[in-house]
Image (cartoon, rainbow, N blue to C red; front, side, top):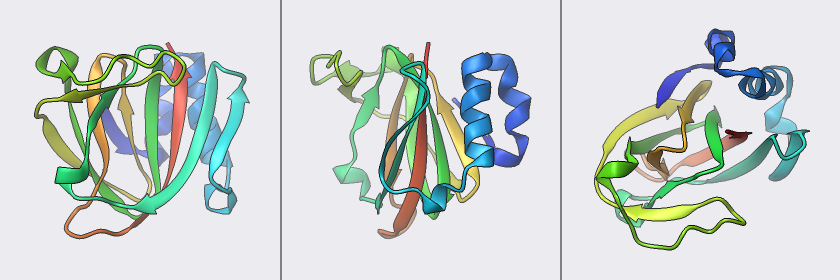
Length: 149
């Protein structure tokens, strides 16, 4: 897990060309103007899902993990908490859905807060629980860049 501000995105280009493309997209695109949905950056190797929602309680959250893609979860507007931990410390509660590259897990992890302008990178070996309220439910607009590993 890596947490930083989008102003420092170029510091993470070393993660590879696909990460660089994703970060460049986030920096040059007015995401507030985009409607919810999927936008291709580099075919299926790098794409972004734009979403907005009301954050939820910890009790309503679920840990998830991926096998094919890393996430760059970029908070465009609002604040939320995100849980994280290593896969080895979690137990799968659903079968891996290969089509959607997701499985859900149970266990406990650490939580961090992300605010407008912040991003968090989750690699495939890291479980994560996004969309959690900081104190009470609030509006968040987020871009999740999916980077094929």
